[in-house]
Length: 428
Image: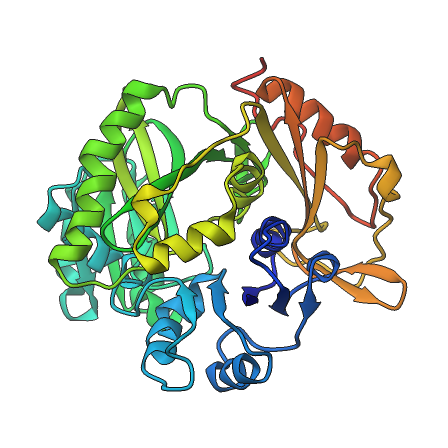
């Protein structure tokens, strides 16, 4: 079948790499893609939210399957656009409906959904400009730290963990009155801080059956020792050692199954990935967020460990045979480390020439996924804050991290930076 993959980051490079291995994949197109995805298919210069251009491409290229990487087109309703268009109805769309994508598109929606389904999460309240003073009073009596979240999509920057009441009040004012994140912060969710270790679990579902396809731990802070500003993710490891059978069973019984059953009960059409952002609080799982797609850089460690044909899983999701699918995993650990532009997550320059090792110099147990790159003639240039994700397999996490760094040492571009301590809690 012909497949169109939407997106341009490391997640999409990993998806392209994985789908291109399938004997079900005839032609793979990536829109807009990056310098790395071009090695597995044909990049197309399309905006991820230009649905009419995507439609025209689907017709022209005779697309059978549309795989949506980033959240914005999902929240804006690309699934519904396809299913409501006679020319596109036959296409398998990997992604939820607009209504179901509110699990990520609206923090308030997801918290209310969890309340209705009895899913463990932090206590919360929501406020707008209409009850701004009540929100200030709520903050003033709240224990610390306290978490403030812009309700809508804010490019991963809409969450603040305030350690003082004044900081929380200032953030609350900036979000609502000063419209720090535009429409995304017209409503703010204020919730209790959960102390624990953050992890992610990934599920593929058709809204009734589901399969867990992996779990991972992301490292968000720019600085070593988990210090400094939050980023889109500086690295990731999988599997997470404490995610043992007992913890995973609690997660499945208390969170995953009630979520999927809740989607069905509430008539929310869902054919795609659910990202469960969890907090392990003393061995007990709590949901801190849902995403309606795969994470980045989690995809870069989850998909390399997934041995099952991904395109076949998408087809099974569509034709109602997902529950009969067999899932298998590489027993090795995987670690990915992000090489980022100087100045990231603040201001950074683009267009820096990247020196990459020849294919023969990259060990067979190591993968270089492009995130923010672009081709310019024979050169590969930086085109984003997070530039490359180097993933390696190892006998344990420490081994995988060491192998990733060995390849990173062969890569260079002006201002390049990466964390040396990814996986520091799990050295062996």
